[in-house]
Length: 111
Image (cartoon, rainbow, N blue to C red; front, side):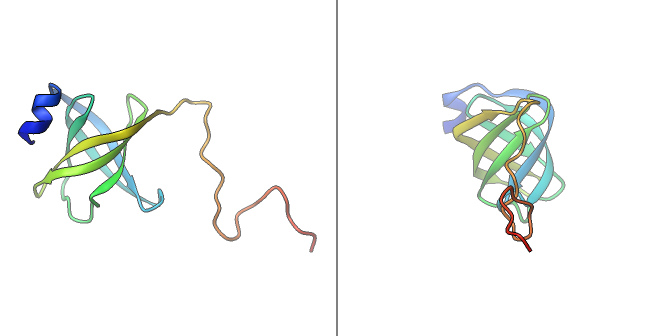
């Protein structure tokens, strides 16, 4: 954890389940948030290999999603700073429809 992150905001120890989401939401890593502030977090996972430098972090209990950028990493921990975008995902919101080839669309051409 960098000194800069600590000076901005006080980190508090937590144990929250979370998901690292990247690659246009097609790749997901499970992790545990070990420390959290309004501008940063420390994530723990079995192995940090393959986790990109920027991704979305979905914290399950709070149902929040943050844009993140890695500030430091070890073999099992990643320190991240949150970007400007934070969303709260409500139960009534649905995921955007798939735009992949072959996905159902509302305007289909007759066969």
